Image 1: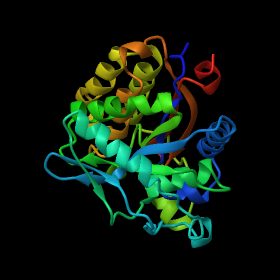
Image 2: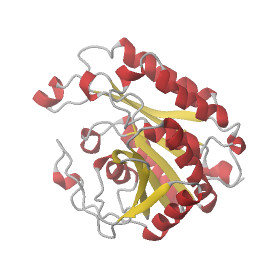
Image 3: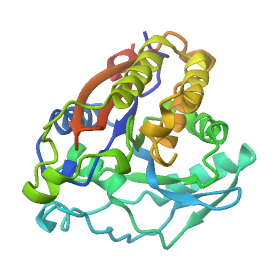
Image 4: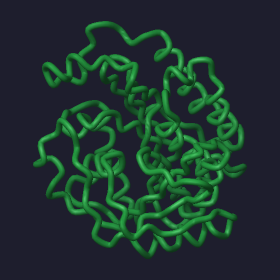
Length: 288
């Protein structure tokens, strides 16, 4: 079941830049999720990615009216260069005020240019045109409780028809990936050997928490994963996990009890990178 009147929430593992250029189960699901969002008339998208973090206690919201795109390695520019971004400045300012109301040192960044962690997913979800979109930064202290609170502060946007998305990674350690097939053959999906035990173990633990806990227990569970014995092997840096904390805040309220996450697609890349795609709730349930 799902909380009445609330839009779904997604935690997407965006993987390597090659996920923009190559077809995959994950890309197919991103398109499906985008089609459903458009069919149900979402007001806009609010995203936290994995490649933008503010220092000290700050958090920022993108307010650049004409952002450019950072280059995407190993992907032909025809896949992304002409895609028109659609920054939602009105919602960006709304997010800033909502964050300030919860005690965050929040401000707009009028010079921020979008990075592949967000627009890669948007292109796959909405290939015919980007909906109004707001990008929210992380904080570089990578405090899990901080990022849960960010998601909780923006959770009311779900009642207003916004789609909240975290774009990061369930298992994302670039140092432990097998790069040779991609570098030699441009094959990011090659599996010359099975994923290593640490990747399989942490991936399973993430799925268990997402699919078997809800409400405040989900928030505690996702946070507790940072103490998992294999967490540091699965995440050499914390940046790609923070979007999961953001999502837990957005869908982990007391009112969300009974709304369990679903593993909707999964694509292994570079042997040890697991790109799991999770969704909580549905538009059908929201309209019930």
